[in-house]
Image (cartoon, rainbow, N blue to C red; front, side, top):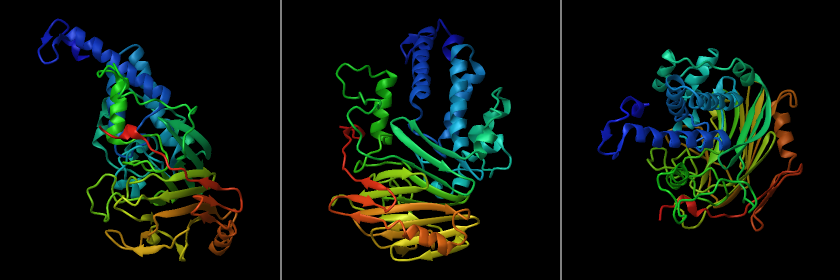
Length: 402
């Protein structure tokens, strides 16, 4: 648009005219929009960055005409539909392609501003990026509120990631699949080191970005960055999850951080209301524990055992099993963290409700009846009722700058 304002002027730094700049920009913008519409976002459902992306695309929608405007509308709609799908009791609870410490409090992420504009019953949180909506002609789909309240049992793709979502009126269970990918699996290819690749192309920029900000190709044993991989939510402010920290304390400035991201990615699979996870931390990695965010002050009832954690709130239950031993730990948060000091460890996360279990003791008995077991030698997690998670270590060299 700026190039169109000064079509004949010569721009010294760009070494081209405004009209030439317009043509270059048009290619890049179209390539990016086409890529997102086909593959989805790399930093998908990011609680902090989604509003920034939304505001940028909104400028295209509001100030351009023709094909770019229509593509922009489709991208804006796509962002909102997936946020609505992951809305549980008013909060976006979702795996994320890039996240910060706000992962602890989904109801306090910037993306909540976007939900509030659609449905004022959702928790509000301010984001200056969304001030552009005050003068925008973009209107939200009337279906979004219905999507927010609708139960979900879906699997979908974002980038190279496969996201699982199981949502009922009482709980939400969601994760990214993390298993060794087969050679014939459809993924977008990293072309950064291809001979003759155009360094100004979208294809190259996307591939280079993967080296700095991590990847949506989730595979066990690969170094992580700021990707968030699992959640069970039983209220809009009450969630549990597991991660492998990038530092030893909550005050670390490392990325991945203490609560956000993973130093080493686990193997993950999900079967409706259950998530199975296996971590194998290499000897050379400096952080030799994983930990669970389990905020006991937010539960109405909870039970803690060596290898089980159970919680109840309202009509909802959550249970977490580990092959190791839960060790309570207090840092900046009190009574919310349980570490497991095992380099090879398995977890099972389970959600339930009062429709199936009248009281917490019944839910506890139901969880234990699954009889989870972890074979370290075979790197395999099994349960009585069909969960079988296999850990196969992988390597992804596209994440390194060499």
